[in-house]
Image (cartoon, rainbow, N blue to C red; front, side, top):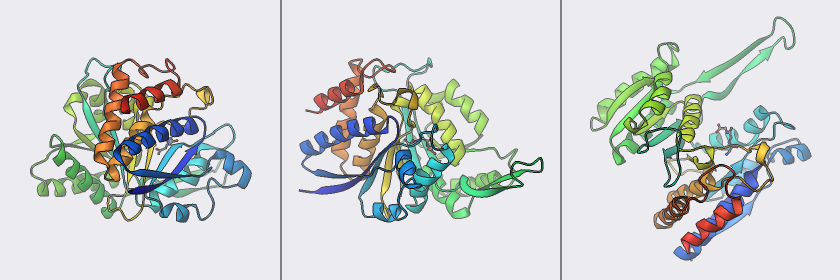
Length: 347
Ligand code: GGG
């Protein structure tokens, strides 16, 4: 029987609840489809940081390299570890080390879920550059705590990095409705974002079958709310993509439905799958976290592993569950009840 090795990093807050939920759904799907998922759990989290002074061991990335994929819950416990420490100690190093340069987030309404907009028939694929840009981590502070203090944070955009994410976006657009929105703020940011626009134009000539529009990020943010049905594939830098996909999550009913995949398109290292949401400390340990975003992320993982039929079955089970009104409003159904309904729909 074919078997895939999966690294499980449940993380903090609601992370363990939603990861366990998704894992039981994925195990059921694997059993039915006749393949195995062998999970190895890692306790890397803010608690691990408290105990060891690190979010993951020094050789953590090396340890993960041997796995077929990584399923991650949520990271962050700001009451004890600053978010800048937890993010830069776990999620970002994994994305960068494994060249997971394409962060994919799809925004559409699941059956039975009501979003805040009148528009219901939108389906947007946001592709966020995931290894450089505003999240490069280049910068520093001097004269800390004095009136002369200076803080500098430099965004880094490389030709290779911008070209590969745009190319990925063009390829995705080809498999969908053939429309690409390239997002910058090139009127204000006259070096990096003008550079991005130039590369967009260069590639547009190569992909003449894709209709490309360049938007400023503020205009695109408004469009996601006012006319989401007009958008197909959206490609944006690391920070802009992060912000826009929170709008995407909001219009699809909330963060509980927003799934994501950190993809290494060359398959030279494992890809990582995680819900868009964070650790939600306010509802941690209450058993009411919505597991759908993580289950959907798990379906993306199956798809990436080549188990397309099983991925499709998981999504059909999720849709059958929400169509019955289960998991369709924050806090309405318990995590366990939503998970049980998805598992039942699979069997
Ligand atoms: N699901 C993982 C998680 O905890 N995400 C929260 C977060 O703030 N992530 C930062 C990012 O996606 O860049």
